Image (cartoon, rainbow, N blue to C red; front, side):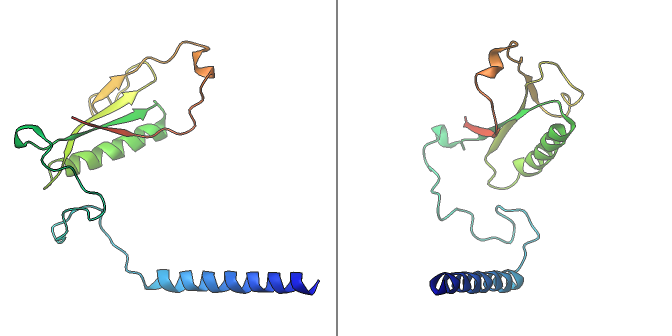
Length: 146
C-alpha cells in the first residue's frame, strides 16, 4: 500500500509542476497578430528546415502550386471554401508567392451559386451502392506542382 501511495503522490506532484510550468511559459510568450509567412518586417525569406528545390524549373520560371479543395454543398463547407479562396487571392500576388491556381472540387454533382465566385469543378457523385466500400473519414486539400 505504501508504494502505491508514493507513486500517486509523485504523479500528482509531477503533473502539478508540469501544468504550472506550461502556464508560466505560455503567459510570458508574445502573441503574434499576423498570419504566418514572409512579411515586410521579416528578413528570413527561406525556410531553414525545408529546403526548396531551386534551379529545377524550366527556363528560370517559378514552379507554381495549384491548390485543389474538395467541397460539398453544405453551408459550413461553403463558408470554409470562401474563406480559403479569400486568403488565396490576398496572398497570390504577394512577394515571393508561388501560388498558382485554385480549384474547388464540388462533389454534389450540381452547380451552386458560388461557381462564379470560386473557380469550381463539378464532380459527379458515385452511383448508389458504390460508396459503401470505402468511407472517407477525413478530407484533406492537396497541392499540385505545375
